[in-house]
Image (cartoon, rainbow, N blue to C red; front, side, top):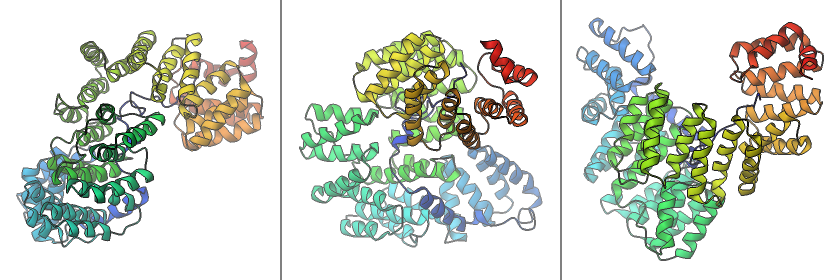
Length: 589
């Protein structure tokens, strides 16, 4: 069956390589982050290369070029070393100092980055990222007066400036100047950052022990973003620490009803169930400041791994080496940059006592798959699943790898184990039925797949991935076409920019004989996702049915050249190119 590839969720409802990215720790306006991040271009690194490489001594040109190449490959550790080599010949070059500093910080080499940052600030007092790093290092060491002094010149017109002022507020809190800290955060007025900064005002008040100020601020943050797990965790902790276990349980129930979960939410939920105070979200200034850097770094790296996002995440771990969420996010950023070995180094440092330890070990195994050793990945995950028989994450991750290895029946067994572990009754369990349904469908056991998809929708009726997969499967088999169309239309309403789901809608129109609508819809799908063979193949079929046969053949050639993964797909496309769709359909009857 030539199924459109829907998004396949992992244990926490996110794509397999990402731990709950849809539950980001903050919610910032994307445009605001991009625009303000551009303010960092004021650093020396933004200077143009007018005149070629004239600013680099001839003897350092090779090191400079090697550093630029390493940067392109997201190898900040190598880039830092090459820039340091170049600097030996030109220590007063602000551009080289900036690049060596930024690469060192992005690689987490703060022993080197500190001296470079100080040199850069000496050369250029407006070097914001260097000043921010020095301020963070002073705050880490509880040198609050130094941190305040270093960060005071920064103005909140750029992302670094906003971060520097918020970090200075945390330093003021550390120095016991609480009212000044609150006033400073409140004075930062940049579109897209209001809710985030309100959340941090709440965390500051919580760290300071000012419950009357903290709880209303955290409540407001929760009301604005009730499904952001970091906000939920902080708010629930504040409620339960004050003895309001009933309200805390209500917040947790509302979160779970959304069909999402997270190990830290599970952990705080256990405390609330037992009516035990779970402790503060951030215990001290360093942990609060680390959350600041983690939140902004996550926003920066939401769509792509950038040098800045790596620097912010490294600063989070500098401030709080036990910030496991920052470590997981950093590892995922490195995964996204295809630096799997470096990511595994980060994952392996996560404490064995952390709620995220199993997730980290799972990610190590998944990265082995990315490095081409699927057998070893399956072996390691098998060991993890055996050693942790109550871990739903281990069972689901192993199921994902087995499915990647086309061991569909075995994958279904492990998804079933996940359902057994959770009980299969929670709204968040929709994903396990969905994954098992996919495995059964790929194993050509539709009689088992269909009930799982339907059960998934019982638990989460408006889940667009499931609506798409089940609706498309029915369409492809010619079953329940009107109901299938309604399901896919709902999925498109929920995900209007998802090319795969739009393709499903177009294919439903096609199977219903509504060819003109199919063409219009499939053209939109291909425009959004032009590099997918199935989508181009479908568009070719629709073109043929409306008499646009030359365009149909072109789309089939594109689909063939893209290399469809489905069994027999290339052979069928070749027959359509040679004989036309009418003949192929007639032969199939």
